[in-house]
Image: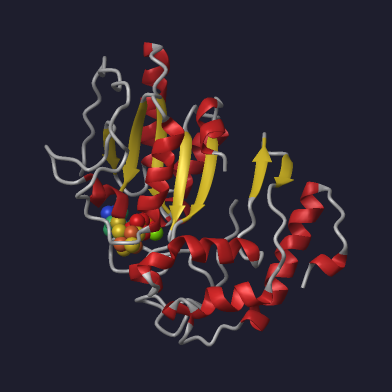
Amino acid sequence: MTTLTVLSTPPAAPARGAPLLRPGNSNCGGCGMSMALQIFSRALEQRRVQLVVPASCAAVAAGPFPTTSLGAPVVLSTFGAGAAVATGLARVARLNGDGTRVVCWAGDGGTYDIGMASLSAAAERDEDVLYVCYDNEIYGNTGGQRSSATPAGASTTNTPAGKPEQKKDMIRKMRRALDLTGFRFLHVLAPCPTGWKSEPALGIELVRLAVRSGLYPVVEIVDGRKLVINHEPDFSKEALELYLSLQMRFQRSGLSAEGLAEAIAQSWRDLRARSGRIVPADRER
Ligand SMILES: Cc1ncc(C[n+]2csc(CCOP(=O)(O)OP(=O)(O)O)c2C)c(N)n1
Ligand code: SF4
Ligand SMILES: [Mg+2]
């Protein structure tokens, strides 16, 4: 059993200076999660931050005590308890009144699957936590098994012929999210060259293709009610074909752009209905 020692008066997180992800970390080259940490570092500027990282590649990146690759105080939590641990730290930060922002930095497995209960409970209590899910669509740290965030048709180590089920449906603005209070959830598509069997240098391009094709909607939900579509994709079939062909994980199942088109169109019909926007049907394919 893992025990967590909670200090009654934990030291305030120091003012920031170091990058959030230091050189020499253990992440693979081209890791999307590394890029997300670098971008997050810029959004943070000098804000004090404490990280909670459940079991994942990010937890391994933190490194063995007393060294760490993460440039902020970190609590590594059990796989399922990220949001609950972040809740405790956020409440102590509020009692101390030192302005420290608490960020739970979790993988899709630690979010969509095992961490869902503590995530849901923290959101329901409106805890003052920024929860970031870097979604590489697999259990990267343990060899690349499917998670419920893995898209249908992707080969993983335990769905070699391609996952039969669709990606679970969950829904930018990092600086804005940091300065809001209450529970905030940020979903980041994080290419994993090792698991996606893609070129390490193509991570950003893959994300652009996923957004352009409509596969990855960029939306914002405010106060759980108002849905804003931040970016209107061109639903490019070429972008979708390129997105699929640049990753070996979709080769074996034979997933095609044509085969995905109706699922994408349906998810956009649903989004538009929730956003209250009427968009001509010829925008959808
Ligand atoms: C209860 C429990 N089950 C299984 C594990 C083994 N485990 C460690 S990390 C991990 C996968 C995490 O996947 P994800 O959250 O997507 O992060 P990624 O590894 O992809 O960065 C698993 C299964 C664990 N640490 N605890
Ligand atoms: S396995 Fe994937 S997510 Fe994990 S460090 Fe490597 S590239 Fe990043
Ligand atoms: Mg993952």
